[in-house]
Image 1 (cartoon, rainbow, N blue to C red):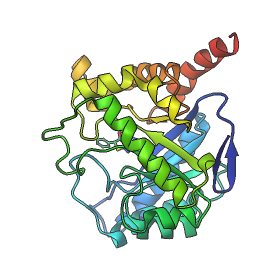
Image 2 (image 1 turned 60 degrees about the vertical axis):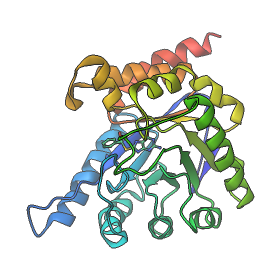
Image 3 (image 1 turned 90 degrees about the vertical axis):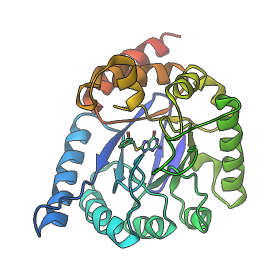
Length: 274
Ligand code: 7PM
């Protein structure tokens, strides 16, 4: 079971976390409103397609991205959180800023997805005080520069050691183990070889004793392997999601919810035949 905010979720079958990007619309004065409307409409479509939870992001954590201020990030995210408050699904917010976490939780977020694994000063405390779920993700470096020269002794061992330490820090701060998931952070300070080693060895994270979340959807490693552009990576993304599930991932963070759902129906049927 995974406890996050208002929800307790069974992880007997892998869950689908649908990605909701709140993209700033710089073309009109009504941009903030229209970008929220667009994000909410997209989220409702993901729910129809079978999403089990939603991950709302204001684009501050993207590889290569310039950092976005707290006020700007909240202006993007809060209207979407409010618009989806009664959609029936757990709402995750993708942020690494404690101030954004606090405001998002007050606005009804059920989970914080932190690519920085709650390492910002105050982040552990904000989550611990709230009862929301958290995803602790591994990243080497910072989003703007992390892909320049990623290096590891042994990527699988290094990422696992980091995540074990962050789970311990979270528990020490008072976050319930039942509210924690971990994520190796595909593409976050990793070469293609690092990403492949992590996916191949993903089952090794199971011994950490908390559920595993995997995000490979449309990522550049899939482009590097197929030569396909980002808009053409649905099938490779679904295959990567199935491979993750077969290696024990319990939450799959994806753009293509409908197709991933179909694939996981086959996966889950085969699992149940065990
Ligand atoms: C450009 C490149 C835009 C990469 C967006 C991205 C993850 C995440 C992201 C992940 C968790 C994306 C990424 N990836 N959070 N946020 N795990 N927990 O594909 O793998 O959305 S941003």
